[in-house]
Length: 180
Figure 1: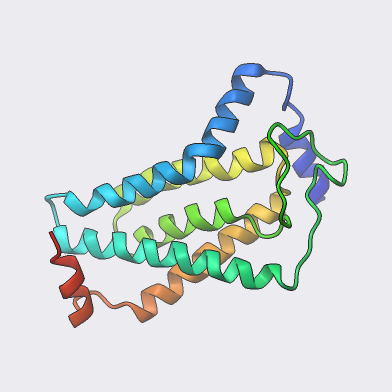
Figure 2 (figure 1 turned 90 degrees about the vertical axis):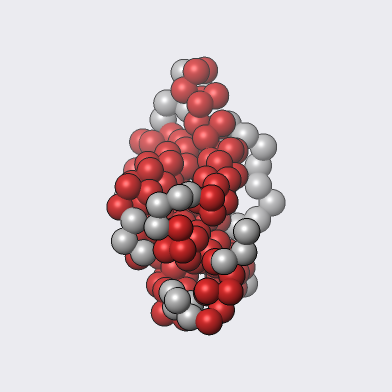
């Protein structure tokens, strides 16, 4: 089922040059754009300390999620779908294992962190970009659909841990959110 859905999403790859370029572009710059958007949240005027706390939480979740992925990669060695003949690859091959997707982890960690802070408009904006990044990773042939789902789960788990460990209005939070 996973290979079938992955192949279905990747089926148009290589057939539509404009769509291919768009998906490659989203895959390559989606995460940096989301990180930039999070950084820019630091200077919002409305509900400044709460939004800053959300931005810090998302950064911590992002980093924790990627650290969890490195731990998972010690035990799970899943071949990339293009190596298994499931997808047509549009970019240079990756040197690491397929599961979980770091792109999905990073983007979904940001979305989850903002969602857990009760910021629906920001969450929706980040969620749209995260969906495009995740979809693009399967479309360009570098991940199975379940790699992306696994990465999303890691991102949500990391955001949950950060939500429990890093409390808003704590002494540390007040110190950091008052910078600049």
